[in-house]
Amino acid sequence: MEQKEKIFNEILAWFESTQDIKEGMKLHTRYSKNYSNKRKLALDPANRKKFLIMYMKELLDIYKPVDVILPDKEKQEQPGKKVYKESIGQRLSKEFPKLVFNDLPDTLKLLVIKRYSAWEESKKWHTLQHEAEADDERFVAAKNTVEAVMENWQIWEELEHYQKYNKILGNHPKFKEDEFLSMIKELEKKAVNEYVKEFASIRRRARNNIHNMLRKGKLNEKQEQILNLWIYKHDIVSTKLGEPSWEESKPNDKD
View 1 (cartoon, rainbow, N blue to C red):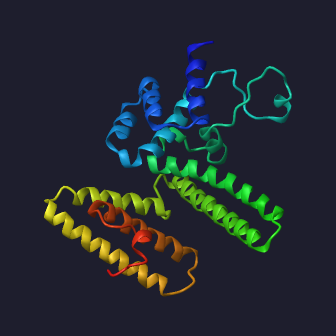
View 2 (cartoon, one colour):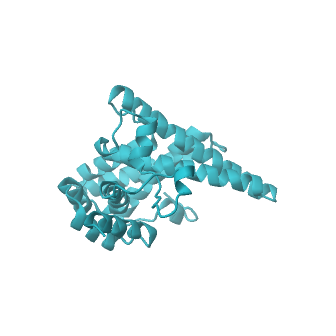
């Protein structure tokens, strides 16, 4: 077995097992030549797992042996051939010919992976919707199908805009999260008493906005996204302050 195929099989085995972070970090350190990615994994423990999976997918594509063929009905029937799923980069290039996965900003890379995951989820829930025997099961499956499809198309909009203008559209909630995390990192550079005061203010404002939105009753899709973003912000600063998350504090909410 050639060295390249051996490495490919090691990485593939990691994906098909527990995807242990420590083991994944060892494999990435051993086989990746991208020092920028290595540095990001080392310095960003909060996002380490999602970036590790993304970078390991890139390695899988880099070390893929030449004899590995893509899924094809005729080729799948040929004995003795190895058949693996189409890579993320190959799927992307079919839909967006001008985009190269490895050249995308990290956030867009994550959204590409999330989009194909959402597509698989939509197919799964669509099948369950038709197989459901009870109305409540059918409703849950239909709701999840719609949510996955909407996620898919929202990310498609981001990629289409980036392909046309080489600029990030920034409508997806993930960009709002990244912007918020950057702000938090800047605040942490201040003296402890200063950033604690600002964190407390952010948490209080987030909680007030959550309450205001919940008072509206049934929310539309856009409002749900905004609500989830406020809960996300609330929980980030709560962790920094050692305070309960939104879910943990709801029963005895006195803020």
